[in-house]
Length: 255
Image 1 (cartoon, rainbow, N blue to C red):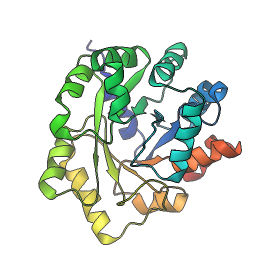
Image 2: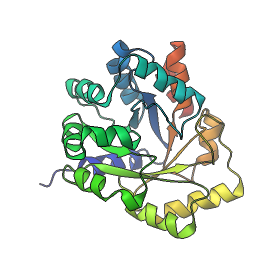
Image 3: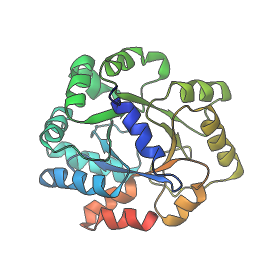
């Protein structure tokens, strides 16, 4: 029997949530405290369908104030990509697939082939790389392909039609559909043009489509019901962890 590739397990986890919208839960690795990282991941993995782990970076250009702040705190505590992979490797495997979100520089510094091997050994199923254009993604894709890991593609409401088709066709695991222009943390709105864009993304994609940026409440999830397969909840979870509240309770309130 052929084993399921990690990237296929990621796509299946999103699809398996139907008819409800899958929940992809984001946290910044090592924030708010290093010692709570393993527990935070485990809690989110038990409450969400997928866990997205952010690799802290000094210049997170796609992120709003909340995630920028969490990255700064994590970096000051010494969090690195190598530390994250070491921590994940030491943890038991969880039902919810793990995805790493990182800007490109830390990945290149690690070495792409070494990174893909270490990520596979750590139970990671794929990567989201916001500043990696598809035209320059071949080396990253080749390294991940050796271990069956996904390279998730990001699209936005202003992505040109032909490029939207190209990115959706190339996406593995899921398509990350940004709900708005700008950075993370704002409240989502779904005007008619956003609905049309999300519907086109689903038509073009061979994998599930997950919407991210600004999703904080059950009302936001309901706005996206029927338009996407999953939603990505980031800043709201980061703020919940900062306050010492339960991220599992937050996720339960979104279902």
